[in-house]
Each structure stands twice: as C-alpha cells, then as structure tokens.
Length: 242
Image (cartoon, rainbow, N blue to C red; front, side, top):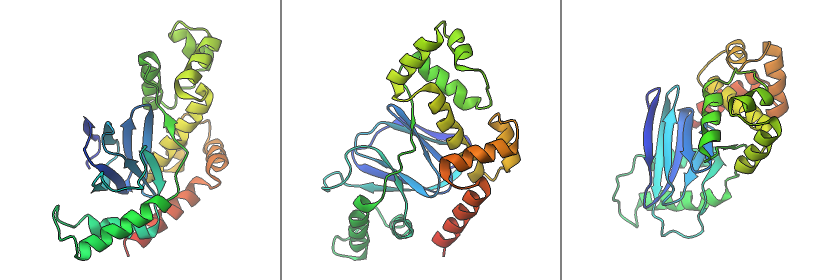
C-alpha cells in the first residue's frame, strides 16, 4: 500500500482480518480510529463500514472469512498477533479464492479459526467522535499533533467554554480531551517509529520540548523506551519472516 493511499469507506458480506506485515495501517470505523502496526491486526465483522489508509506506506495481508462460521467476534477488535497466526495468515494469503474443502488449504483455515478466538485484544484504542464539530477538531489535532493550545484555547475556537467542551467531548468519546490527546500522541509515536523516524524527530513532530520528555511519556504509557520498543518490533518482524 503506497504512502498516502487509502481505500474509501466500504463494507463486505464476509468477515475480514487485516494485518500489516510492515508499516502502520489506519482503519476508520464508526466511532473509532484504529492504528494497526505489525504486531496487531484488526478484525472487521461482516457488514462493518470501514476506510483503510496508511500515511507512510504499509505491506498488508487481508484474510476473508465466510460469515457463516460460528464463535467469531461480532464486533470490530484490535488483536495482538502471535507468531503462529502471522505464519498461518501468510500461508493462507497465497490460497486461491476457491479450494477443495478436504485439502491442505482447509486444514490451514481450520487452524486459523481455532486460533482467532484465543488472541488477546488490544484495548489502547482511539475514540473518534461522530459529532461533526468534534470530528473536525480531532482531525485537526491528528494532522497537527504538535499543537500545544490548552483545552480553554481550543474551546474558544469552537465558541464553547472550557467546561462545556470537556463535558461534551467526554459524552461523545467516553474519555476526556486531555486523555484523548495523550492517546493520540502515543498512536502517532508508534506510527512514526514504524516509519523509521528518529526519537528526536518524533519528539519535535509531536510538540515535546525535548526528546527526554517524549521518552518519559512513551515509557509511562508502554513500559518501554522508544528505542526498546523499536528493537522489539524489529525482532518480531524478523522472526515472522524466518
């Protein structure tokens, strides 16, 4: 998927598992923006309207599953990928659309269906409000993560008081605006790390005063330094290619 490319909003009559082999995918679904780096995948049940994009480019694999299969999630989820499921998806991605139900392909698909419900969910998700006013605000902050205006200053641009903005934003997203902005910066940091940007570059792009303040935030949120996170991710990708 080339940098800046996107698939417009659409839906399928089948389930879809979308996995980034490299780079970061962004899936917009109703009420959420889901960030999908290589250690994660997004599960989209049949009928889910979604749009998929990648700012910096990504290699992706997509698996389509008949919606008649039971015991599969009925809501969109971000799943933490295991080496086993990565290998199975890579194998299944080469299958033809039609294959013999008693052959090797069917055995691989049966393993995928057995493994899928056992994958852990990732709960670090970014709510995305449907309210047009707050949707525009979130899109602006997503495009300009270094914007350091306070909640009161942002409220003034919307002709709202600080308290009204905080209350209505929480009603629309389930979390406060400051919390949302911290989550946004974390997701953007992961996106930029996967694009190979340096820690200093990311700190500047996200509006931090120094690389050390960015590193502190990242460690607080993930338990890892940005460099350690990048090292772990690289090893994970290398292992999946073996």
